[in-house]
Length: 381
Figure (cartoon, rainbow, N blue to C red):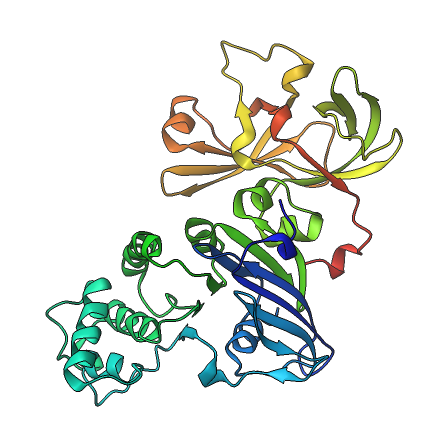
């Protein structure tokens, strides 16, 4: 992954301050990308968004868009909000209640004749699939339709950067899913960086190309979404992205020639892909996705150590739609359960039930090693 300074065009942000909200954040987003800012409440997501828009001034840092400097604490540059080509969609939409959808969009248009402004507003409303509703006021629109008006108004500024601050949180789940699909279709026409603030990890995964994981104002990891989900930088990131299988183990042996490392995990030995970073005798953290824990069929046991077989008893089972999350108390490791996700059909077919003893394999290629956390357990997110 190239460093943000090597990325062509787009948005580049470096922000640092101690008060009133501590920040040590680094954000970059290329044209055509969606970057999700993810973290718990109070992690600085909205503060960063408002700083990009020029609504908050940060003590120290630099913000540039397509090579144009918007803010630089060292040189004193601070371009006013109205001069930054930013489209901003708020959580509350902030529509004028007494104006029609068309008039709300027209409020954001600069110059031009009245006829030209009407035509442009209607084009933008059509772009967000609101044709035929141009004359309705916000109270006559559904929550999803109001969100689209807010998006059309943000696009009316012909922005270089589109900023979305929890834009889907005020609508029901079905509407939210539909808006996700529509934004996914619309983004191909928007050749600009899009920064999305969300507390919903599922939403971030669905919509983003890149994620920036924030905690207490600090960027813990920034990169492609899939990379962060499968290769978290440390235990803190793994917890923030809701990895359920986070464990500690000791490096037992390593072989560069064989391309493997063997770990001692409680009374179990497991094999992972070789990484030169870790030494024999070192304690490491490791994660494995719940979907990479594979149930053994009763008639087909594991074929050996390379499949990392372990056994245990089912502690609990929770149905999540078409998936069942199974917690397993692993023999030889009593600290906390190993979680497996399996289709409800497969769970029924295999007669899984709490208290039953089962065998599973841990997919070697999907195990990710991390440096052991130096943060006390109670201090971690």
